[in-house]
Amino acid sequence: MKKIIIIPVIITASTLLFFISCNKQVEGRTDNTPALNPANVDLNAGTWKPILLTGPAEFPVPAPIATTSPDYIAQINEIKTWQADLTGEEKQIVKYWSAGAVLRWNEILRELVSKHNLPPFQNADGSYPFPSANNPLAYPQFPFANPPYAARAYAYVAAAQYDALVAAWHYKNLYNRPAPYTVDATLQVLIPKSTLSSYPSEDAVVAGAAAEMMKLLFPGDQDYINQKLEEHERARLIAGANVRSDLEAGEALGKAVAQKFVTRARGDRAGAAASNQAQWTQMETDALARGETPWYSLELPKRPPMLPLFGKVKAFLFDSLTAISLRPGPPPSVSSQQMRTETEEVYNYIKNPTRENTRIVHYWADGVGTYTPPGHWDAIAAEDFIAKNFSEVRWARNMALLNMALMDAGIVCWDTKYFYFNPRPTQLNPAIKTLTGIPNFPAYISGHSTFSGAAATILGHIIPEKATAYDAMAREASVSRLVGGIHYRSDCEVGLLVGKNVGNYAILRAIADGAE
Image 1 (cartoon, rainbow, N blue to C red):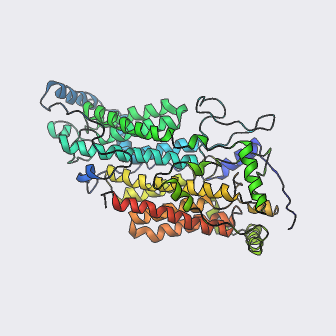
Image 2: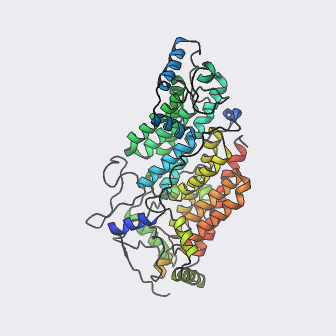
Image 3: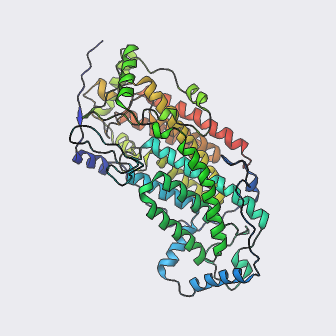
């Protein structure tokens, strides 16, 4: 076999800043989005199948006070006090949050992922520090929101919001307390009126569930998260959409449901996904025993590979045996003609990059300092869901389906990467200079391709008229890794197929959840 020459890549602070500046920045929030005014309020959503809840009434919500009671009248008067002298800032807060609770909290989550998607710099002794959930404000801050971590965060927040809203719709139908502007016609109404019961508040349910999950996932940002929670609920008061008891009941329900997801998260094996030297060495040894060249970190000093045991994390859409069954067959042998051909193909793309290839490489890069590939697909979905004018509960259901598919795609992808421990093109041919960084983990299969295949599959089911467009986006995202010098063709093609297989499990759930 031809001798492999390894050229280490020294990562300095200036190099890291270069990567950050060259990657696609977080897109601005959809500030001009009109207020959510769904064409269908999905009145029967309290009967939809939840993800973790045993049923919509698992967490009791007490009956609301009568709208004729002195306490309720006092709550109406609180709204009038807010509305008596509204500032421009308060009107802007109402406008911002009226675009939709699920939309806005997903945007906030993407911002936090981007903020924390920074790999730690090496210590003076050449070792690398690890973020610690027990000391989240120490350097490096916890978490390092890399793609697998981000996919898991998006999934847990979205799934908790969905289950909480299914429960909320159940209690809305049970108690049927009218909105405050229906009770008192003298109230200003700064948002579109709804025929739904206002108790418990769907916005407060979403906010409570999101805040509880995000404080677990980003413990160093609790003050910011709490500030957004308070601002969101204040916007509903100012708008005349909810009285305080609507909000209190909604927030309590959202937090109670979220705790069930917190318990799951603490036991889903994600905490053990990082590597130690013995595991790293064993993966190298196993690859050598198969007669293959193992993947090596090209950073200097060598950085431990990213979350090599993430493939053991508990998935949402299938069990662990199914996750293993979704692992594809092996990549081409490093010594094979096919691998030589694929490596040469990568080199030819890099040697003469076209303007179009450079464009798609950077559009889909989603590297350091961004919301990662799963967040990119969340942003794509959000734009399309806005146009569909879904109800909050349908927004939550669709985001949960998408993000569970993305998380589970990450699990299968990372299982595959570390099972085969396959080297990247830059390792086999040092003349290959990528157009955007070198990810610090094995090549086969492409994470971008796997995430994109899963996302396009479930989104094509949710919005079937765009299925062809989503498939085209997924193929472009996949090809961007080939023409960018990061992956071989087989990494990309097999990754798309594996992602599609995972996405099909999300479709099976969608068909069975009662919302179709």
